[in-house]
Image (cartoon, rainbow, N blue to C red):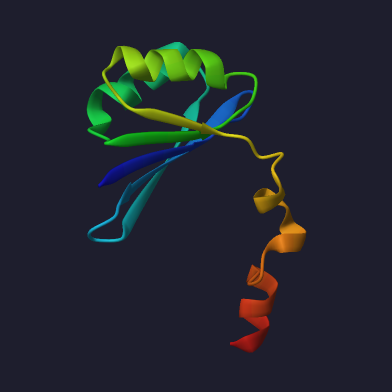
Length: 97
């Protein structure tokens, strides 16, 4: 499965292109504009587009669907997204190395 995960920002967004079979990821920083996302969606070939639910996620979701992409918007206000619930944080990993 090819997943496009987007970390949306007011001015710039980061796209992570992830292939679940090879576990490879490629990152792209792009301006948060329709023109740039049209290019991203046209060429991505993703099976699923995942983004956080926030201000620009509405029009980005509609734009992705216009390219025939399946989308999923996640609410980051849920309990599962809280840092207090993360068992393995980067700081712990760095200290153990």
